Length: 262
Image (cartoon, rainbow, N blue to C red):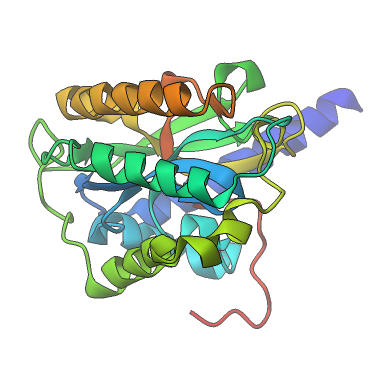
């Protein structure tokens, strides 16, 4: 019986991979352009990109009929850097304002060069942080053809709808007093990324895998940001391992709803 179950799981995984490879189709290597450091809802520190480039947006669109509506969190491109520690108290308004100042200051130092994306990966995980301790099972899918050594610019244009979605998210903390309850919402403390995380499957690009020198430059600025944040808020944030940092395209364990409307 155990062998039969294993064969069924392997067959299901193979079918999923075939479908995702087909969705990648002729998607080209592309680039993600870092835009802003940001404190998302639930007290999660993220690096936000200017929008999904056409190549990745196309993959997401082709997967939508099969997997249904996305969680809002993957509809705007970002890399989760840190989550609030389980025992940290709520932020006070002056603390949120100080954190926003740090985000703005360090965003100004982000490299202007975009980060290459040469492929995506299907990941089955126990920890949604995708850190090694959660034993992620990874299957790489290169984006085919062209683009040059650094991922090139083909497919890297970002549509206005993508840009507007990102602008809408970032504008939420223009009014820090109104944003404070959202920043303090409970639900994404660090344990929810690690040992208390539900298992699942997702489609991502790992920045360390294809980002090359450009990602290394971004990492230098992220390390400076981390040092500043930890100096100002000691023990408040738990940082994800650098090798696990990724940008999620979408979850792969959400079945399409019968009323799906793209």
